[in-house]
Image 1 (cartoon, rainbow, N blue to C red):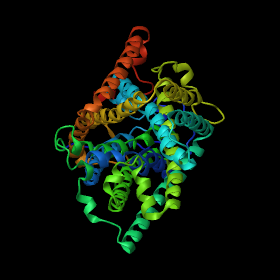
Image 2: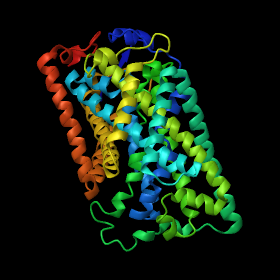
Image 3: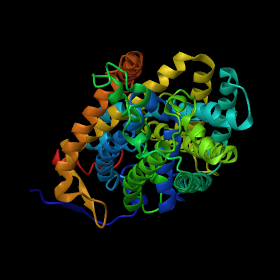
Image 4: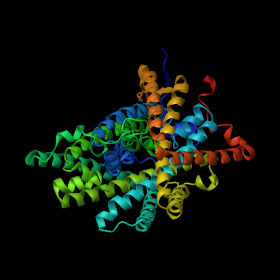
Amino acid sequence: MTTDRIALPTSADEECIDCGYTPELKRTLSGFQVFAISFAFISVAVGIFGTYDDLLQTSGPVGIWLWVVAAVGQTLVALVVAQFASRIALSGSSYQWASRLANPKVGWLFGWLTFWYLAIAVVAVDNALASQALMPLLGLSNSEDTARLITVAVLIVQAVLVIASTRLLGLVTSGAVGLEIGIIVLLVLGLGIVMAVTGSGDVANLTTRGVAAGSGDYYAIGGGLMAGMIMGLTTLVGFDSAANLAEEAEDPFKSVPRAIVASVVAAGVAGLVFLIALTMGIKDITAVSRSGSPVALIIREQLGPVAERILLAGIAFAMFGAGMVVMAACSRQVFAMSRDGRFPLHQMMRRVNSRTQTPVPATILILVVGVVLMATLRGSALIQLIIASTILPALIYGAIVVLYLTVRKRLEHKEGGFSLRRFEVPVAAVALVWVALALFVLVTPQSARVPSVIVLGLIAAGIGYFVKMLAFNREVLDTEPGIDEFAADR
């Protein structure tokens, strides 16, 4: 049994100054807006919309129950992440936690992996917005080139809005979250009423393997059943994005950890209810499983084409809000690493516009990365990169849990702040087991071989820049800015 270390009450800005930084970002995000940022990143309706077809084809309708396993596991991880967020409220989240509690070299690896995860995620979300929502909504024929052009246009609009104002970011994401929750509630109620009145719902869908029934490797490692877990693993991520904007949140020691945990719980519950309603509403499992957009097809068959178009419009706005959140979180990651001199072109990337109080060059960098990826990666190459980005958060979350188990005794508890107290070790231990299982599920399928190589390539590129810093600018990796409050206990 350990004795809690209680920190003296300090404001978030005072803490920022103690950590060696002059507060440059504007604190405008309310508690709900911080929650909205995490929930918008998760974007449960968007995640289900984009992965439900894969679930039906690999594990069948019964695979929806694996969502519960993923939701519980990710909630455990979120509880560990919240422990850090309630103590260190700085942009950069895990990069800052590892740098200050382990050492800057370890922290740099956290930051590098997080940067690439977020940078790729922006492209993945916006490309899905273009191809799966905007193009069908506008009646455009399926075209990869058209989708790429729309993706670039969306990236530009998002960059302008993210640069313009953090308050605007909060308003857009709050609106997107409100609309997304409203869509889920209305669809669940609408489907429930129609199925009850017409008798078109089928409870047996919840326990059938559908088109995957004849699969010989259904229970094998990397087989259909394991693949069904991927929906939850790729959707219930990004809840730590609130921590990346901690320096722009009001009362971050309370609002950020609450947002992290609440967003995962809310997304887990809403997603399960939505999946049950959708699955019961399937009229022809084979036809729906082979559809490129099964969610839209189910809505059209049960509620009509008008409801389908309303769904697409709502999904499009939710995706746009999610893309904005990812871009903002990634730009703050770049800003946090750059002000410590640990990111390429750091002197430029650390600049904050005095009028908008946002990191403009860092945001433009994310836009440029997205445009380059759209221009250079064609067809399967882009898909492989996006799949690789699903492995990165599992690696990052696993590292965060290991870090917590290593340094937890040196963490101070903020008065009135979030804390697991005597449950911290059991929760973290089970979370670590869960992350190991999640990584196993993500990397064992044959389709994950190329994405795994891409992840190793990104790590190798990072090591190259890391070696350059060691050779020519080693001092930035030796010490942390500000007061090292943890030094005495190492």
